[in-house]
Amino acid sequence: MTVFVLVAGAFTGPHVWRDTVARLTVEGTEVHTVALTGLGKRPEVPGKAIDLETHIADVLAVIDSVREQAGREIVLVGHDYGIHPVLGAADRRAESIARIVYLDAGMPRDGVPALAAVPDRRLRKELSERAAGSGERVAAGELPPPARDEWSLWGSTAGLSEAALAAPQPLGTLLQPLRLTDAVAAVPVTGVLCTGNGPGMEMLQMMVDVGDPALRALAEARVPFLELPTGLWPMQSCPDMLADVLIEAASGGGRRLTFGGTDRPPAHLRPFLLDVPERPRERTGNTDLYLPDGPGPHPAVVFVHGGPVPAGARPTPRDWPTLTGYARHVAELGVVGVTLDHRLHAVTDYETAAADLAYAVERVRADPRVDAGRIALWFFSGGGPLTADWLAAPPTWLHCVAANYPILSPLPGWGMVDTRFHPVRALAHAGQLPVVLVRAGRESGEIAATVEEFLTEARRCGANVEIIDVPDGRHGFETLDPTDEAREAVHRAVGSVLARLKAKGP
Image 1 (cartoon, one colour):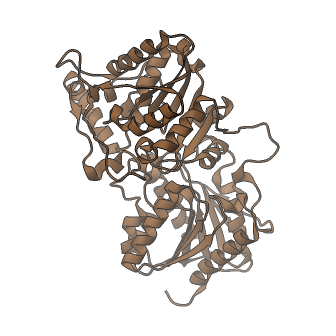
Image 2 (image 1 turned 90 degrees about the horizontal axis):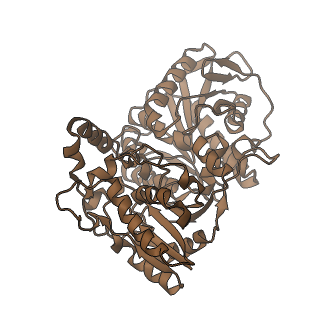
Image 3 (image 1 turned 180 degrees about the vertical axis):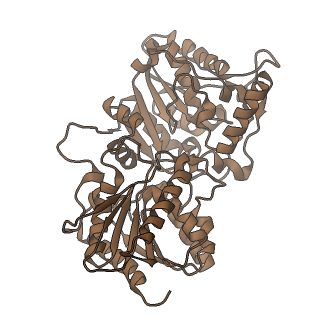
């Protein structure tokens, strides 16, 4: 018999599982929800500091009460922060655990505290500094639950009508490092992805293909994944769907990431959807130029790749078929095509990537074969947040900003709420700078939400935004979906950008 042991995330307790438990019980499974000390359970010793070991002991107590009865397969479900005590307990009872389910949770490592997974960077920094200076006094304190309008700082609230009942999170549970041996590595695992709060399978596969080491390890381990189209709290937003997914997870069901073992190239290295003739390139530093025929000076389009892309990815983005395909295509049409590599290796690297881009643009404008007064910037995917600087203060020589399937506001798990890399907030300052936005109809929910937020702001402030849709296109459709519809969209987008570059006047 399958026995589920459910451990909730930060600030929440057993009550959040109520509806999911009811559905699982109807389906004939046994369910136990863990009351973590301070989050549904009173401390055994009043006044004693509550830390991660306390919560691990809470989970162990439930496991031990269940495993006393033979014939039961224990499935531990760790939601968000809850994966930390789940892993700590499973490491000590590995022989008793049939499977661990990561419910929209990160991948904790030995020696790393849960604080490292807190999305809000300012809070992480503040607590780290306080812990370094105050030690035990901080560990004995509490972190108040988010205010009603602050839950989104911790994850997407998609599907929620109101915040769940919440309790303060004991600080020691976030500050104490998780300690693991190799025992837990033998326990089968399944990941459940909430696609309103983070990437789905297609996006994870792309990240595997470009070389993300942690995800490649999951692909090699054949870890199955399941998806839920909701935010961070599926037990509140879609409890019945969650119950069904947990039952499937317990049986080992789900899709698996792939790595190697096939002759087909990964999605980002497949051919560009247009048959574009080869052209010579000139490579200087992090920048490649594809020059048109004729003496010039010519307008230029700088193509800015997305990310994050692991530092060791090969080939680097400026050699990916989508980027080189666009650059060669515009060069064929009389405009300098520029590709570059920037150092967006993690979501903490946007400042570095922005500096790389600004430096490359100035080098391009200084080239005598380039018309320095006629430049367009074209962004892709995770490069979208880099548009913010150019929208906030458009230089006179910038004639157009284009973006394909872009991220246009920080995603819920990034912890970048008060950041300059927020195109939605920057758009009001763009004036009538033309923006060409190419939307993929089969976009992931989390990215599509940022695009809709951007378009809502565009309507509010009267921004000059042209939308080109690829209804059946996916994120990265230029190499994934070589359809007539997608080719037509590329021709329209290129034509629109070049028309603005070649138009008379400033």
